[in-house]
Structure formats: C-alpha cells, structure tokens
Amino acid sequence: MMADGSLPRDMRAMVLDRPGSPLVLRRIPVPSPGPGQVLLRVGACGVCRTDRHIIDGDLAHPKLPLVLGHQIVGRVAATGPDANFAVGARVGVPWLGHTDGTCRFCLSDRENLCTEPAFTGYTVDGGFAELAVADSRFCFPVPETYDDAHAAPLLCAGLIGYRAYRRCGPDAARIGIYGFGAAAHIVCQIAVHEGREVYAFTSPGDIETQEFARSLGAVWAEGSDVAPPVELDAAMVFAPVGPLMVAALRAVDRGGRVVSGGIHMSDIPSFPYADLWEERTLTSVANLTRADGIGLLSVAPAVPVRTEVETFPLEDANRAIADLVAGTVRGAAVLVP
Image 1 (cartoon, rainbow, N blue to C red):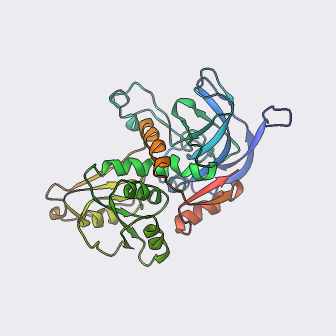
Image 2: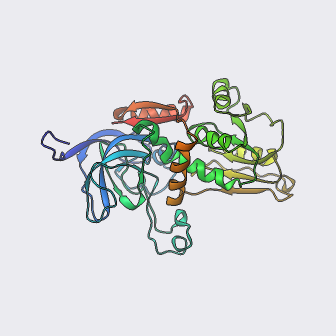
Image 3: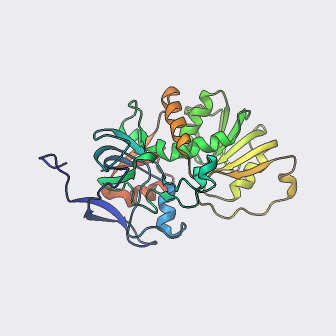
C-alpha cells in the first residue's frame, strides 16, 4: 500500500519472457481484480520444480510473458465484485486457479481433471511478485499457526503430497517415499502421525537428507539404489526420474500401489510384466481439488506439520530455483517479496 492507503500503479515481479531464458526482475503494472477475484499483497511464494519445468519448456504453452509462482500466501488488498474474501483476509493460492465447472470431470467431483482449467503461475500470472490476482473461489484461508513463509509450501508441495498419500490407500501400513524434498517432508509427518511406517529413498550418498527423513519419523532412510528391508504396501515417487517408478514397483508387495506425484517426469523404462503382476498398480496424481486443500489445511495444524523452509528475496528467484533443482535446499524454497 502507499502511505495514503492507495495501491501502487506498478510493482516488482520476476518475469519469464520465453522458455529457456532466466527470469528477469521488472516493474509491471499492478493487476486489477475482476468479478470474483482478489488482489493479494504477497507475503511469501513457494518455489517448485514445476517452475523449472515451465522455464525449461517441458510444459508447453505457458502464458508469456509470465509471472511464475503457485504457492502464494498473502493478504487481500482489494476485491472485485462478489469476491469470497474481505480486504485484510490472509489466504493461500494453489496451482489450480480456475475450472470451467461444467465439463464431465467437474460435474463428477474431479475438478483436478477439468478440460478447461487455469493454472497459477503457468496459464495465469502467479506470485513471484509483490502483488497477485487470484480467483477467490480457489483460495483457502491459511491457518494462523503458520507464518507466511512456512505456510507457502503447504499450497503445492503439501497439497500434491497429500493427494498422492491418499492415493496410497487407507490400509497401506508401510509406505516408501522416493525423493525426499518439499512434498515428502510434509507428507512424511502426516503418515507418521497416522501410524504408518515411512521408508525414505534419497539420492545415493545423500546422508544429510537421510538423517533429515529420520528426524521426521521415517523408520528407514537410504539411497534409491538400496532395496528396503521389507516389502512395501505403497510408494510415492516425487523425484522426476522415470526409472524410480520401476524401482518402486519392485519394492512393493503384491497388491501394492506406486503413485507418481510429479507433473513432469523423464521416461519410464520398460520392465518385465512379472514386476507388475499380482495386482500391483502404477498410477499418478494430477493437480488438486479444493477438497484436497480443505483436507490438508485441516490436518496440518493437528499433526502439527512442521515445514522446513529456506527463504530468498524476490530478486533471487533464479538462484532459489537452481538450488532447489541441485538438491541443496533442505525442505522447501520460498521467495519473500
């Protein structure tokens, strides 16, 4: 806000001009909220591997130029007509930014598969900026037990992890997690809280991350090149590495399920049918639903989930993304404008 309480005309934002190029710090006009929308003063925005996939061109047809960022926590600075939140409310904005509400998927409680969706920080501008506009119907109240930076990872890493975890099934007592980053460190705590055994798989030789997983309740943590000491009931794969899907499939017992939590992954290599036989399942999760958001943001404070974050100033978004991909960020990377 300006000293007189009015909104500024422009703001700082990290902008992607074209795939393959780094983000550029630029001053752009402050967006105006339309019907049902809110304008947020961004307090924090999480950084995700999906941001890197958009930059690299792995996800086709982004809005250009684009402000990335889809794990936004902020305060409502202005509202359009019929918005669901009042000025001053603190809300979170996830990846799923809008659905048509009329396709067969929306009408069957599968809005995450909507045929005409909008995605925050991909097809509409996101939160790598000082202010951002969002559809208020797809925003969530943020639990007051979290500050902005520690709440931000819940809006994507937490949500996609929670959806993947629920896909493992209610009877999965032994759960493997391949790739122990932002999503894994959140869902591990939920699984342990609910009495499951967690087996964590990291990059080979990553002793620090293995110790981190154990500190969050994992009963076992080793490199992904090591077989677990028991057969698993289910496994989640968060690392975007196709061969890990096959490794996880070989680690689960008969009737086991392997869930991919990534929006992009390298190719899955061929494998013998015997690895899939005995009713093993390979599946994936796509996006999220608002019900996922309500569920996670109710469960997280009850556990309570502790998010581990490393904060970066807005202008260091490129470094934050590089550090995340390099695996040097413990937990989640978060931009704080």
